[in-house]
Image (cartoon, rainbow, N blue to C red):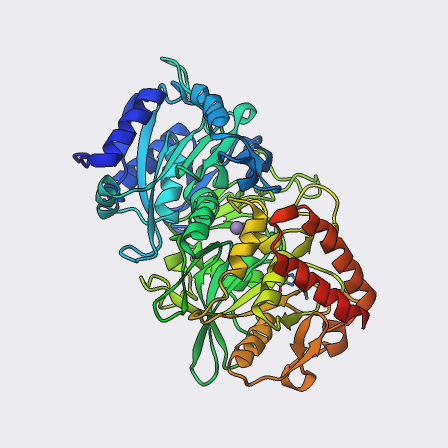
Length: 591
Ligand code: TSX
Ligand code: MN
């Protein structure tokens, strides 16, 4: 097949990067099936991918990474702006010049012995006024096949990138090959890894890692860090949120967007299977929402992505049946276990591991050895179009109208199951005040409360204080503001037992939110927001209203004291509205 001819801005930029990185060959990716097949053949030949049993898992592959390249590296992630204050107190900062001086030598000749792939991609439905184009140049064919699932890649997108501005992403595994040098299964360079963002020139330079968010630059780098910067300048929102549609027994549908810190089950909520008779939920997106105000003043959301890049361990028929349905075929599995019949397994997939399992380290699995079959950050890459609960409007160029925004976190006490903000300002405060307890899935102490405003701590591409201000600025004439809620599925009783069944039963919470929007459910005021009136919230068997809606004034007072300290981090950049809301809630708690 003849390669697609490049022109314009894309051609010029590709030549520039080619000159810098010195690849042996250049290949433009256009989404064609034969190109995809060729890439998988190469990955299998190189040992990067193992084809899974086509009878069990059609057109699917398993990859095991270098054990030193298994997750995003936040301490090597930089926001490079002319002024340090524009990156803010929560990001690592380098000046653009200093950072370019650091990365240019790394990229110089870094693709020797490899093919440079040019991957033009579209974030958002093709043809949507809300879609944006990016191009990732990479020397990793593993990255290319993941991008083919995670983004929209077509010949039209290649053409569009020749004539329109696009986000420029340059990625290298950082392991050039000298003539005759044998490659490894997972080339990378952990010692020199760096992920650098240049929001003022819309560039990302990523070196040394082939894993996930470090390497699939469309996701966290483009759709969150750079897009949040663009959104601030252009009056929209680029958020770390799932999008779902909720339909009530009368057949009316409302869309909601929700954000949670890690380990709260965000993908599980995105794909929730309703346990509440008559109520239905459908999935638009599981990780990122781009939200824009249309001419009618509605907030319209698109999922910029085309696939799911989900954490595998813990995903099962019981916790997320629709995710299991999504990854039946055409999927890539990274750092999970391999069964004797050529299928995958991870902790939590079934109650007992299958006989003869091989771990992600390529070793025989030994139960109780402390060596898991799957790495805790093992992933599946699967087309979202395969989700059994996919919403009919998931690819609508006009997006879906958002009626409610849900924030949340994992807390064993104080924070009630659900509460509603009494105002937009209070809702923005809920987002800014988001906290979650650490779990055993992350390294470090278990149960420590961490701040993660809007679940954007590692993903906001500018000053977080300015980001709060941007959210507050959404309240203006002509905007039909969604209602804002805060949920907590993780309250425990004195014996340490969860007091809420969670999972499919969370539909009751979504139903209460829906009914609030319809003015069909009563709420009672508390100092920290509105909670359900007991009679308008249908409790599942064996649950207790008082346990789900505690009012621990002393607990909340210490929450506010801690927040006051946290907000001080943002100094002059903390918008007055946030301090005012904190003061008002504190006052209400003391009266
Ligand atoms: O994803 C979760 N959700 C959201 C589902 C839509 N998890 C898993 C979190 C780890 C990623 C939950 N865990 C949820 C939840 O709502 N709730 C809990 C806590 C919990 C765990 C088990 C039980 C009850 C609550 N019950 C039994 O195991 C019987
Ligand atoms: Mn995420």
